[in-house]
Image (cartoon, rainbow, N blue to C red; front, side, top):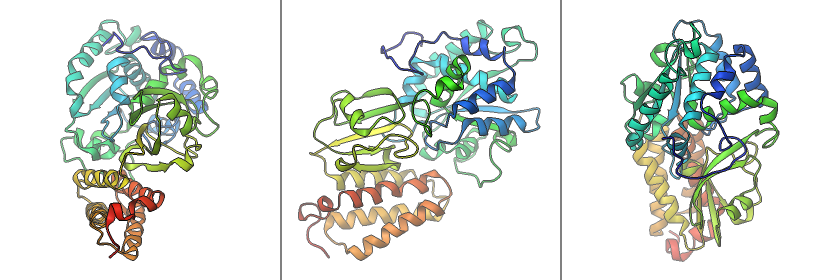
Length: 401
């Protein structure tokens, strides 16, 4: 795990870092000082939701309990996303140091990495790295010789269910139950794993923590925009010459990202994976940022050769398969949206009915219990609206019903 597979350069996560330095600096600070720096940095969760990390940690730190948990969400299931895999394989020191610092800050003694099933082959190298940390007194009991600083990490391998990317479904899975989202409130920071205060953070989010502790929140804010501070790691794939993982500052335009990845004759870009939105060429000057185009990191590029109706069908088939079926809007709604795509494909549709399906999608966005059903209509709505002429041409759908 120590030998990097790629030589990458970035302003924050891919910058130089010596394993353990973040932990060594953290223990010289009070928990309040660390929380202040995280708050000052305006760091938001990198998994897609964009919730302020300082708020989550402050609530968990304030919770009165002798048992707290840090959970690393490494259940990377969004189509087109592979950044967390790179971070786990090539930069485990940032992930695990971030977890140790988080445990120190909120008063947790146990950390759990929820590892996606397809990444199980990384289990042995990751566990070997954790043992190395224990040998170097960076993990386990009396970390760095501090008697009351005890924190250890274990790895749990999930079963690759998309819904377990949602934090409460992930916690249910950790407890040995079927992966289904819980009703909220209560929230995990109060009633999480084993009903104890739990902070669930994305892999990339935790990788930011050691750098913020070492350099300060004000330094972190020098990158990105006012609302979207720092950098973001993007998994770029599809029709481009240089698909890879890139660290870019928030605020980078879509056009700049396409140039960096060597994309040509681009028709559309899917931002945020299947659950995100499909952006047409006319909008390539938009910015990748929480205030414009928020994303967990998946960027899928489609050139002029791609049939957007087939792209949409592929996405909707994915969501029908991955819905846990717990709530009606998601369970039935995704099937209805897929039926609508099939009707277009056969030329057996009316615009009145398709408009009703768009309204159904908007209802799903507010009525579904978790992020799967809330976001699955995004691609349906954005592709139909942005590629209307192509999808409803005779080449794609036959005659109108």
